[in-house]
Length: 256
Image 1 (cartoon, rainbow, N blue to C red):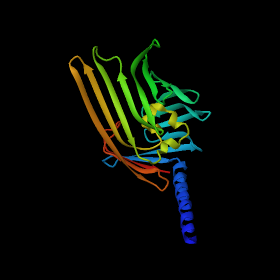
Image 2: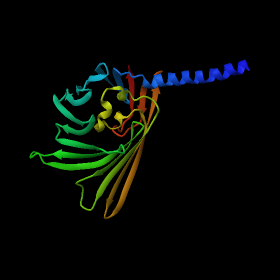
Image 3: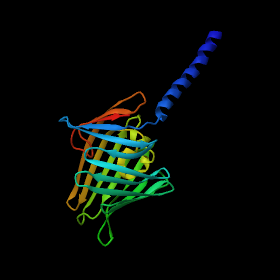
């Protein structure tokens, strides 16, 4: 009987220890200091990341330098300097109760966000002309689950008469740590797409639909990404034959 008591007493303690170790890995936050992106031809681009604690200060590679500005723990400005053209693009971020409500770009566009009570985020993008008049480009909804962006539904405005164009992009994730999620305030930047998510994208499905008087035309593309991870459940390597933003093979190595 004493032996049975010892066995049953050991099981919950062991389970508690295993659960504690898993939580430690999930909660442990760390920042990557360099990424190496390689093409199929072996051409590599190194990007170096600088931080103050968990606030990102800058990113730099051979093509550009990106500077980040914080106010009260929120990223309020991102300035991208192109080393070839010597021109800069500035994004200003406006928040209400620590939620992003507006992005203003020096490239003459603005995006508005409205956060709904069910967790969905409605957004509208406008271009701004020389008379400071706004013209709607598209509007849509962002859907989240478990701190991951799982779907982006969008309707494009200003198209041909009697024609409606729309898109739906869905994302599937692993259960490991997205390194961008560890950067303070990065998860608020809804214009950065799925990089704001807690986990890493392993599959993206992009669907487009055009409805006109002549009928409906639909298309769909699927993009898969594979990862290798370290002992802390952070990615060390990311490989995709093609992606939503890059039609070519890409391998990214993360150095912490």
